[in-house]
Image (cartoon, rainbow, N blue to C red):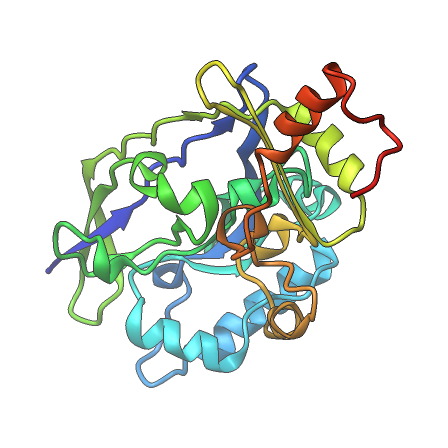
Length: 300
């Protein structure tokens, strides 16, 4: 039987008005196990102990324990058997180097590369950029697939509003499986296309200066270009670190953000409901000062 695997396209980048990176991708190196190469040689021999023995052998060399529980392993065997099992994600450089030194001594395992979203400016402009999370493909899937590879989708800010552009178009890989469900042969497919880049009117230097000016005070600050209304800086305090949402935020940290009385996820600059100030009073005051009707010390 032939199975269709959805392959996500590389996510586009986000730049400021001067072409400086605000959101990018980096390769995260992990280790994958190819279960068709680890299948038991004798009928009736269990697969799970053989997989754990292989993971223990690898862990002893790279110095990092596997990131897969017994329940996760059994779920992968039941639902995603033809796909590689990613047993380690985002390994440190030292662990990758130790694996490279081993060569091909351990069968059924190889390096796997996954894209990870990064924000070079850190927390700067976090409410503008937003963050990404694991994609819910049920709402966007154009064609039926048997399996899906891990994919990011925008969950807030520019990442969410322009998700359709940033995500690109998925490709497909055709995999032939045998009667037991193991991968038997790769039949090729179509390559994914990269997502488009998004360039903002935001100025990174002005944004950083505005954030420094507001400091730790709860509030909002927006700077507009009076020529065309372009947003040059948009600040909301308190803020958060968008990198903590990649690839997914822990339940404990999410609960902490939700319970924070400062509401760091709330964008006060665009969603706050505040009474408007008397914007015409400065014009009246300037006219009175120019005509000598009052002085800067006059109080009403």
